[in-house]
Image (cartoon, rainbow, N blue to C red; front, side, top):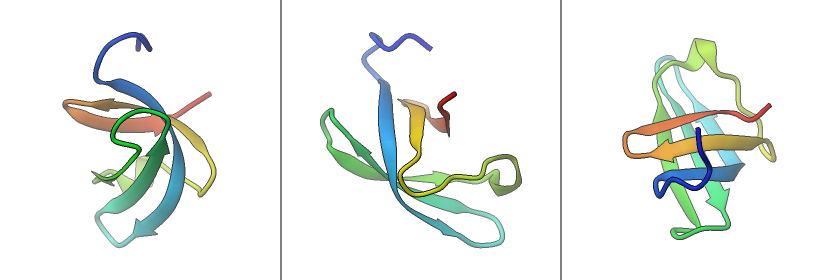
Amino acid sequence: MTTSARNNFMATVGSVTQDATVTKLNLITTTTPSSWTSLITHTSANKFTVGQTVLGMANPVDVWISK
């Protein structure tokens, strides 16, 4: 991922809600829009926590843990 690409971003996880099939993340960023919600359908592969820094791509939507 290149951070200069228009649709890429770094964000902080504001809240996490999980059910059996979907992880709902509220992401807080320093870009516009400043926050939005992302639905992640592969809950078993990704464990997110509030305050964690994540990397993402807005189009198509994908979010992954920053290392």
